[in-house]
Length: 380
Ligand code: SOE
Image (cartoon, rainbow, N blue to C red):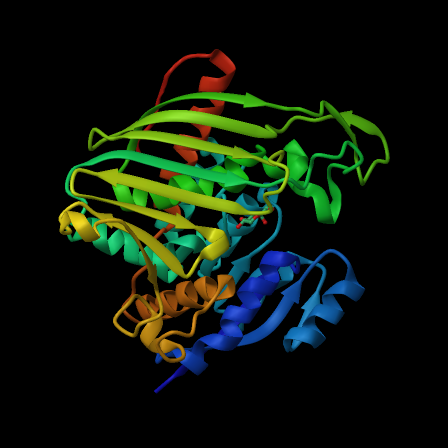
């Protein structure tokens, strides 16, 4: 028997769309014990919320997030608003006993994230932070190959997340479209927005990060604020590079920027082990590059694995071998696992506590860049 699960979505931007799509698709492809029902969407502008509700099939809309929390009919709150609103909404939702899915990064900083973890764990509600890239089949397959020991001892973990959309000084900060550039709304720049993805995936695949040494830069120091209309100092990091040690002895090397002309969302990682290496690229997300030193030397080389066969992660749920899936499917996968775990009374990884561990790395990166020193990462 599939039970109904009433969803209240808070935030109707890009992420609100990815989550709504996942709720709408999940029962078509996954045999899960719940059926999400799109009950209410909440956003600041009434006409936008209304249009969003019409387009995605939400039964109602509101401009007041507290109404979503107070509504006894709502089982699950999905937080897709800017980072500065995550804590207040998540803590209220936990107190009201709702399940919570929250967009990444968990909070503005680790101190705020700690208060969220405390509230969520006290309430005992099911929770998940949306680090969606873990559930791209090729990325999940990479984790499987590592866990099977195929790489042997790991020496290097290298990740980049490169974009180019803020190079023009005319791009404003703040407001609906560009809140990611406003320190008050975002908490940080590429560190929380992009490197947090890389850090989450890296720690999931390769274990915890112990210490970091970082540099950051803000290339454009002042931008017009979309809400005030005034030119204001820019507080976010536009670019960041950091080195780190993992607990398993391997070395990490991470870079992110919004100033890499020509790259829109180039998330890549490469992992080098004693026996094999793996590489992945978001622009070709259904492929996994794999080099196995155990192959006979005359045919040894990098293989490009097309991750579409039914024995590969998630792929038995989609089309037929050879037909690939895309970005949006990673959100369907995380909702499917959330619903399955919910029936078993469990949260889904990465839960708030795991996202706090990522937040500790982000905070250590910021501190290291500021102090120009190696910084030890706190343990969650
Ligand atoms: C920023 O441009 C952004 O949309 C991030 O906020 C997302 O988390 C990332 O997946 C793609 O880029």
